[in-house]
Length: 321
Image (cartoon, rainbow, N blue to C red; front, side, top):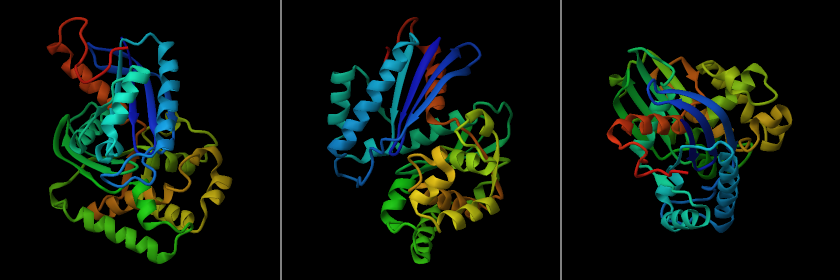
């Protein structure tokens, strides 16, 4: 069966079209697309997503709907995360998307987002190792720890690349004081976690920050998910990236790294600091990079519920297209 999964994040909107075998749960990607409309730009909890960002959202979803129509999908899943959780006008936008485009947006709580991230990230690892998954988004960061397919710790934290940049790194390039304040904020947030319960055999980072850094590390001129899937980033390499990125303006970063940092040049430093801070807090030296995440996890979640469904029926929270 063909399933499309759309991940509506604070910074990016990702599309996966996949050929899925319900019996084996194997997900074969046919198409991966990403757009960076940054719907959470300037968003504060309890405030509204602005009109220009809503129009960008419509534009991307309309484009994705056209793409999806060419694949004759059996199922279309739309998962929205932090921006929709905190925006005062989220329900209004959901209604308008349904009326205008015929698509159902499902907003997941922070812990559910973390669970889907975990399912997506570990999907290619068929073993009983203990895994930590780090998902750095635009408005929040999820940390998940589990063994095999069982999740033992699952939490979402209100620190992301867009929110962190807007709150702490307004000056670009930032001054040393700005970076120190941001690092202190991250460390203070992480202190809520008892790090002694974690002893991962494998640490996996997903989303735009690690995948972009992995492309930069190996010198890619264009994004290539197959080249970076399963690659690694060492804590010392992250330190060097922080040193480099903190000395450059977003425009200078774009000149050096070109299309690899498109739509991320102004928030990449924040993401790198978050990832580095997490590794330092837990005493982890190296992290694996995965291009998979919520959009894959949402498919796994859908497949896991299929035996409980009648033939030909669709999961209640998702859209049949």
